[in-house]
Picture (tube, rainbow, N blue to C red):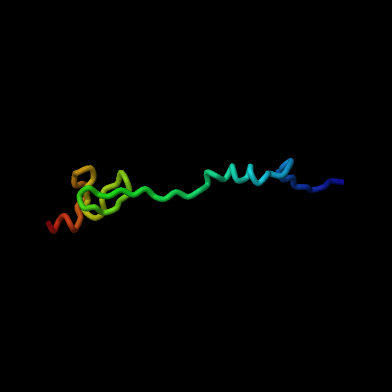
Length: 70
């Protein structure tokens, strides 16, 4: 007589609330980091060119409509 059994991973004992919560402490969400552009003061992500004025580290790297109109 052959049985077709599927074996699953079954924990040996129950995980306590403290152990479960300690494991999940690193799963929290972080607020995105935002800095202000030194040229125009627009909030931007760090290490990115400004989408409003096109400047990065004091140099214009992207042409935008605002900088072309000046």
